[in-house]
Amino acid sequence: MTDLAAIAKKKGIEYFLISFVDLFGVLRSKLVPARAIGDMQKEGAGFAGFATWLDMTPADPDMFSVPDPDSLIQLPWQREVGWLAGDLVMNGEFVDQAPRVLLKREIEKAAKLGYRLKTGVECEYFLVNADGSAIFDERDTQAKPCYDQSALMRRYDVVKEICDCMLELGWDPYQNDHEDANGQFEMNFEYDDCLRTADKHVFFKFMVKTIAEKHGLRATFMPKPFANLTGNGCHAHASVWDNTGKTNLFLDKKDEVGISELGYNFLGGVMHSAESLCAIFNPTVNSYKRINAPRTLSGATWSPNTVSFTGNNRTHMVRIPDAGRFEFRLMDGATNPYLSQAGLLAAGLDGIANKRDPGTRLDINMYEGPPESVLRKAKARKLPLNLLDAIRLFDKSKVLREAFGDHVVDSYVKLRMADWNSFKNHLSQWERDHTLDC
Image (cartoon, rainbow, N blue to C red):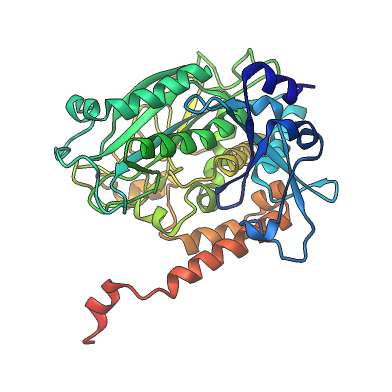
């Protein structure tokens, strides 16, 4: 086993952040001096579960985040600190509702069937002012700002530092761009096994926020921070390989778009559970201002409005950009990196097990209709209109209950319903403006 104490001496690490992510995707950590990492590697760092979003009470015993040595990242901008993803343990047993534990269990199920999920994520974010009320760059005003070189280079200092960090970490970043909204950016790095992608996704968000703050900016992955601008998506590219990781089981060169029967069955599973998956792919009240959204200032939303798939066409929930892989365009910037991967894999495995048919491929512009008759013929369904609908569908999902277990689903529903009720009980200015004189 990797000796973290020895690595600390070799690499000059003085402190370790032993972390975990709760059900709401919040990154929690303890800062541990290197001299104590030996015991922490064996026993884990202790936390009170009730203090986080894990559906626990003050009466529950301590839980411990046991660090995964393979997840170690030495902070490129603060090299005396090492970051570690941990798996939660309580009373000697893994915590069911810990998102990383949940993903690892889905990975084990897939491995027993001879499958290995590889994914990549496209993490979009805005650079905004301190209170989040406006984008930071006042000169970024084009109606179609996507790929704007001048706006990109005005933030060169931030983008370069983030990309340099990814290069140092060996993530193989390959492109950075100004995205479709004013003040919005995207930075792409190579795909990996889904657990490693999830770990990188967690760290990427922390890294972007930290580096932005160093430059006097604030980074947000909020799904829809501005009503008139495109929202923050988190598209996931996925393919299933054999256990050696050498053979792409989704690839079939004889198929028109290069997808195998296994790939279509996997897709069929995701399509079957799409509305239920929204509760974890689109987990906030704000998420539903991104999907099903009207056109934005740039002339498009770039987010899905129906449960549909296509070839190389960005107006659908699922796109097939190349042979042997899918792009799932439903997830947004608020998605929990571990839960989104676990949900994708669970639904896909269900599709394979039950040979689910994804239905008819639609090669039409979904932003221009389509006529209801086309939707009916293709059996395309509308996505949930709000978080409450998504939670209720998630709660009723037999597929996800069987995959995650009743305890996990019930805990997530309980916490998200509390979140919804908090929103519902909030009196907005819109209500006053439209109802005060009724």
